[in-house]
Amino acid sequence: MQILLTNDDGIYAPGIAALKHHINGLGHITIVAPDIEQSGVGHSITFGHPLRIRPVYLNNEFIGHGVNGSPADCVKLAIYEIMKEKPDLVISGINMGSNVGIHILYSGTVAAAVEAAIMGFASIAISFEISDKYADVHSAAKVARTIIERITKHKLPKGSLLNVNIPSLPPDRIKGIKITRQFAHDFKETFARRIDPSGRDYYWLIGTDKTAHHEEGTDISAINEGYISITPLRYDLTDNALLKKIESWNWEGIA
Image (cartoon, rainbow, N blue to C red; front, side, top):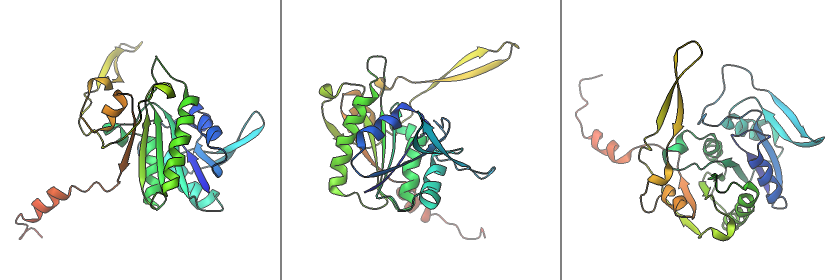
């Protein structure tokens, strides 16, 4: 099996290294990832400056290809320019922090998996909800391998995407897996207002307490309750109900 492994935390991030270590043996793994952190870039692509690919070594060992672009750029370059064989599976992660609810729209981790799905490849985005209480990414990677093995056993359809979130718990305390839908409400994030040395205001996004949100059957509630969340996602954002409604409006005489 040909596996493309990418992320948004950067090619040197501990999450991608841990996942690579634990999924060795599942297939031939090609790593193509941003050469610097790209968290929060969403589904951006680069067209204003040239993209460059460079081989990356760690302790004199080749670990993959670094790209001076976004996670979506990495997937495009990997499939079109780097890999000799097309991937059977694209995996993005492990992201250090969960990607649930509306945060999947900002996530470079999910965007890489979405890009793969758009290109017709099965993909999985994997995130780990780290916390002050528990942040062992290697244990999360072991859990991730088990999930990946189970998914590949059932052969994901081409162009499909699963968003996996692992709670901030040791494996023996995780309650199980829930198949969920996306939490689709505002997280009510806040900004900290501060003053720079020149006396001018600046603002720092400090996020939200995700544990304060609950809606049964959603990704965020599963994580909060100690379950692994698996959410099938689509990149088609069409509001079909509204489409039907506005079709019935009178559009004559405009053009």
